[in-house]
Amino acid sequence: MRALLFCFLSLLMTTTIHTATIDFGQRYIAAWTAFYPSKALDQGIHAAIFDYEDLSPEKIATWLDFNKEILKVVSDLNAPAVQGRHIDARLLRAQIRSEIHKWEQQKPHINSPSLYIGLISKAMEDILKADFLDDAEKAQLICHRLTAVKALCISAIQSLETGPESELQRGLKQLAKTMTFYSETLPQLTRDWKMSSYCSDYTKVYQSTASKIEALRKHLKTEIAPVATITNPILGKQEYGRRLRNYFDNELSPEALGQMALEEIEKVRDLIYEVSKGYLLERYPDQAIPKNRLAAIKAAFADMEEDAPISGQDYLAFWQDLSVKAITFIEEHQIATLPKFQTLEIKSAPESAGPAARIGWVESAPPFAPNPLTTLYLPSIPDTLPAQEQKEFWSSFNKPFNRMIVIHELFPGHYMQIKISRESPHPVRLYFPYRLYFEGWATFTERVLLDAGWEKENKLTLLAHLRKRLENANRAYTSVQVHCQNWNQEQVMQFSTETSLLAPQFAKSLWGRLMRSPMQMTSYFLGGKQFTDLLASEKERLGKDFVLIDFMDTILRAGPIPIDEFTNLLK
Image (cartoon, rainbow, N blue to C red; front, side):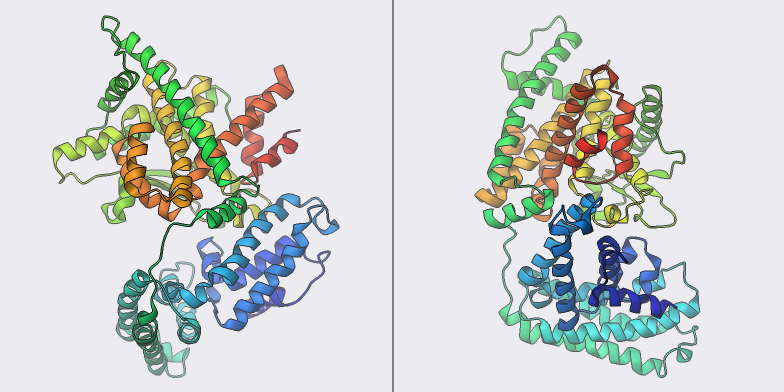
């Protein structure tokens, strides 16, 4: 049955089926799952574990042809095949353009050893940890997966022509460990599974696979390393512009984005000064306010940063109490309809997470996982570090900042939006969401709750929000400047701290994020702006008939779609 399922998925990719029988969304999802089974598994599609990536030239060519075929269907949003499904068509159009660019222009199968090494090194991991398989199923899958790994090694040897020098050095070390795993660790892990019942000669099979991995390692060392390239993470204006257009599905230019972000920076700096003055007058009525604008702002910031956690335990307890208060506020003020069942846990980020532990993150369950638990990992720092370093760290994650950011991260921000979107009947939106929606929504909700009276007695919470708003604009502005104007790390650091007033902890992590995720770094500002403009237009359209909870619920239930589509949905 499982073999038949994946034969069918492969057939969808290679056979033209009339859209009246199976629509373009179903076809594309099935073909994507067949081409990227490990990615589908990461999405929570358990059936995908019965297949693995095939990166042979023939498969890649077939995948490209299929993408071009579906692109013809979804390019015309007025075509009969797209009627009533234009949102799905827009989402797929962006996805397909990225796929075509990836395999035709970037060509990772020719110049990225990590494409193969990543798949080879993790091939057994998903099987061994799969609690939805019994040992017999795991044993059978291991035999099949060994063959798939050998095929990946062969494809890599045949196709690779070059690769980044840094990537190669890491890859060679990873392959050496992987070969040891296949030749020594795997036989030990499976020694009680009667593998000979599933592989005609298990010893020969795993040894042959280990041998192919070693052959690939030698090939990379002798043939690819001498022609390795030095990669430049700076995209350049043309590539940045292409990504920007595809990421947001509009014609926004880098120059326009940079100008918009700079205007926001100047506007929010003025707002921060006004709020700082108001706070200082209220807090210190007998003292003169510094005449210098920056001095007044820094005086208010100093008080904000003074109200900080003293340890990881203090921080965790504060957040757990804060999340309950946010839920109560949303219910009492009829902001949005809360999910009936909470599936959230809050923990301190483990030190093993490396740099990510210093900023924290939300780990959501894959969209199709049967147990959708979400974990908020709070920023953390080891107690063993010097006291001054710990104090500076916690001052960046001060309590006014957290009273604002709980909205962004949990209610009604990321946790709530992702939990509700999982219930969407539109699978295309779950597989290929509109990326601007996520950070845009979470950023927008900060302002909604503050306007509704959240922490209205505490000007420092509003100040923390404005500082975050300034940071969002700074992310977009520096993203453009780095990739289109060749700003270096020192320029980014100077502008971010002196002009955009970033907290030290956030300024330190900015450069790495600009290198890794230049588009995502613009989504806070652009997405938040689009949702804010949408709210203003709906209030103007409906006047006294505007109901906030209806507005918020419509957006949450629709899921991650292009924000400009909400204008028609709300009507």
